[in-house]
Length: 339
Length: 164
Image (cartoon, rainbow over all chains, first blue to last red):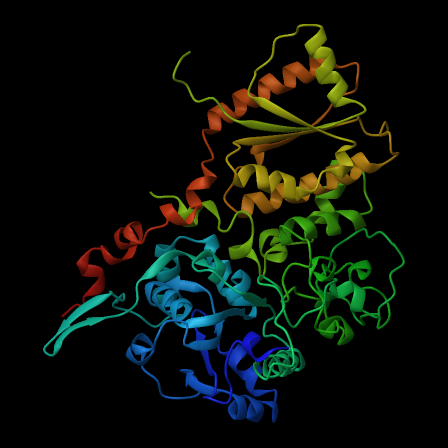
């Protein structure tokens, strides 16, 4: 590689690294730190300029940076409120490479399931249900006057959106969270790239993953056996340690889910819940799962099929557990229809 | 033309039966609702639920899936697969706030042009009653925060105050 093809001149100064969390749980950050001593390589090769979880940094510091001055930003979390959206746009502007990092940023993840309900209902559930101690029914408001001035809290948007529905994204790294060994590999590649020893994959590539399905990595035996009933995993005892979990009657999301985790859950005796998102070439994750589940049902009469399907108590949540916000439909109708 | 709502229906038809039924309805000059846009597949078993979701999210108001009668599939039993997918898909659609009736499964043999025509007309009327689906409005442009304001922020102030 010629020096001119390097995205950054390392000799001059260290490339800048940022990581941000929007609507997420913080698990992605933990996964990054779980790379153990690899994190020291990040520190040795990058200047960490913005990472709210790990260091003190102000939004205004980012605003003051030159456009595209951050080499790489790992952005985790979906876009749920106006603050998330502002930061997504700001970091896009300031970053050369923006990585949609983790399931929330890629496809909405568990917070995306809130797209089944209107915002008003979400707030009501959070502040006024039987498990909430809020006898005076106090609800948050986005602005509040105090003697020192007006206070603002971020305003919820109607639905949660994955990062690429808001800004242009360069790479995707799915997983809830991405496996640490995969993160380590991506860090290694990046370090090679900045030293001119490696090349970045084409824009839009899903990085740090496999290109097949979880089933492909799963060591369990599949016999093309049909099932007469769906059951929850806790209702079968013991779980056969070698047989396909779906063939034991438990809805397992492996057939539609991208590989890269070494089929961690099925190997541990639990069904795949689909945290790595749609496999290569899958346009709609839920649709692929519907096909997979329908394929194992041993019935031809509509009544009998319906009875078997009753064994999946929440079909929408089952097939879109991690992917609702990133699916073709994006959200349930009540969430986006204007009253 | 009246200004009544004209639903857009996407129809997925099987090459061996229902597509020919539609053909028969055509050559016999049977009249049926013109709202359905047919897409021919080799078998109803080819129906990936993605097709249905893509149609609904891109502006279709209803989707009609047609295949050979049970036991008469050209590929032996693929129409049963279509049936199972259809039944599960309807449950998923319900969870998304979409009336399950917007997706219909019809069995029609190559000889049943009349059945195809009447089922299509009935389905169009059913969808007309349900009204437009308008899923396209879920697109980013229409998703401003304005109506969220009205749903939470403009709650009666009494709800937000701590009673004395």
